[in-house]
Length: 344
Length: 261
Image (cartoon, rainbow over all chains, first blue to last red):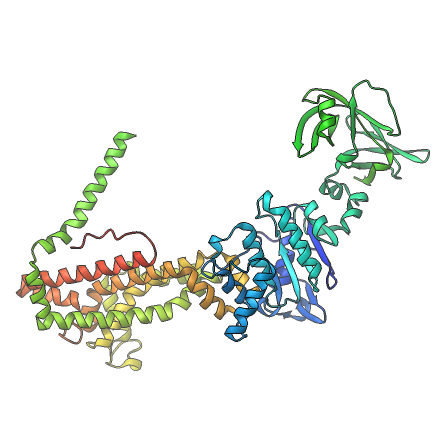
């Protein structure tokens, strides 16, 4: 890995979970490694409570083994030659043998693995491995919890349950927690606040709902799953009208001027057959051509082209009623109040 | 494709026949009775015991010093590392005679470090151990370094975040996870030490009971008593085969492919 510029300041309270979310290669994991002492930056400062762990200006660098971070690795990094119980007991060498086994066993029981103590990692399922790793990370009563993509190694079936369980563990934890994920939904479910990281910088830090509602940039909007269109804004009465690149206009209740990125969430976009009369309050109406229809459970995500690519999320029932298929012409509509403008 | 297949299979058959024939011949020419009788022979027994003793000590030294050294080479990046690795591997390609001369020049009574060791090594059992260690150590070091380097770095990092310093990480995670590779290196080094001839002869000489290991005894008897030399060779083949086989068992490399009878 080449040199990476990391420029961010983050602070996490006791009991709070901050997610570092962003595309891969943004430097999220490097932040965790710097905090844990596994990566030494040229310049930086890391402190936990009153303890300074790293201060390059004062030549302080506490070694990783003395920082007491509970680090959950992406692939869990369980020791393959030790049983689940021995893995959890590994961080407790100073305890007398019986107490050590007792404590490891009670941790495993807390994660519903009381009967799996003798199993080797290779014989555990993905979900069980994740829980053993979590129990191991908590064994030493860490001063901070660091979680690197804690759910990405799990299959879709296990993930929902594991997410709920991890959320519960994080709620119960009384120490600061830093969580790295590339998935905005995961960050929203697990973290109190989300820092969107791009190219080594935290571009916006806020609760997930606020990021989705008021993204500070097109990048954040895109990351939260919103559609992003570009154009030039001009004021028109109380509202702002944007002439889109590639044709068409949209109206927003936000104030802006000049080049902007227009963002709207796919679930705000409704579809009607082409040529239907305008009805109701939506003021934004763009003729579009269906490019793809992807069914996810009871919802269908419809890919559209209206000068620029666009997407709508509607129920499968409405998708059938409109007999949507690639090539069908429709009108996409949404409210001016659901339209966010950010400088492009 | 099939023609090439046949050609490749033929090449393997030729290689196999060539490599196995001398080993088979040793056993064909030695009756079990001769084999047992040779073990009763004083010179042969002395040589076997001495070989067992000196190779054990040499391998123990190699493992004790080589394991942490290989760990350092595998886990650290430093300037000149490539040069250090090359120097460590140099004895692998050194002719045994050159190794013997080198050892004399370094550790002989008039050698570079002769003041330190005096004449405690030359023509002594300790000298045999030194010669064996010199030629066999690179085999272990190379394997051990590769085995440590192949460990998933996340395991070592996990150990550190769980409060274990480097020494505990080395002992509790490094060695257990690299064990198959370490065992393979040990077997290679032991095999090389058992067969060592040239450097031992030049540095320690060939005195019965003191420096005459099995290969030297075989050479000694070859001039006077060919059947005895054959019998001793058969014993050495068996010992080597058992060594190779047990390592393959330990490392789980599958059943032994050695045609020992």
